[in-house]
Length: 160
Image (cartoon, rainbow, N blue to C red):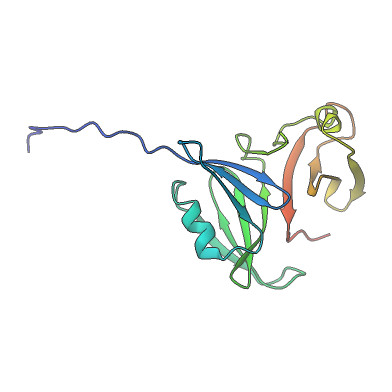
């Protein structure tokens, strides 16, 4: 076989994903903003995220709130669905490029976090657990240089 012709394809522009205490905020390359709130039907959520790579899917039937279905991406974004609707999101250590609408992200220091508002911190079996503006997470230490290692909002499946 010999290549006789080639086409240069334009890269597909991905919608920018941000997160908040109500769900997701998606900003299309043309600037159009779509808010995907908790309670939205799963098929509508996944359609809104069609520009992202394909998600892995799993179910955990042992969560305290009952069975939860997950859609997970390699960049650390995890969406939680229960009863066919979007009920929560979480970010793990791989998600350093994703952030909340107020600027929290994996790697944000406790000192930076405190500048965003009143932070409640408590020790739990998960570690140093915090809450701020409806978003929860874990910080690596209680020192100002301690960093956010996990974030979540809405329904979660943490075993405490």
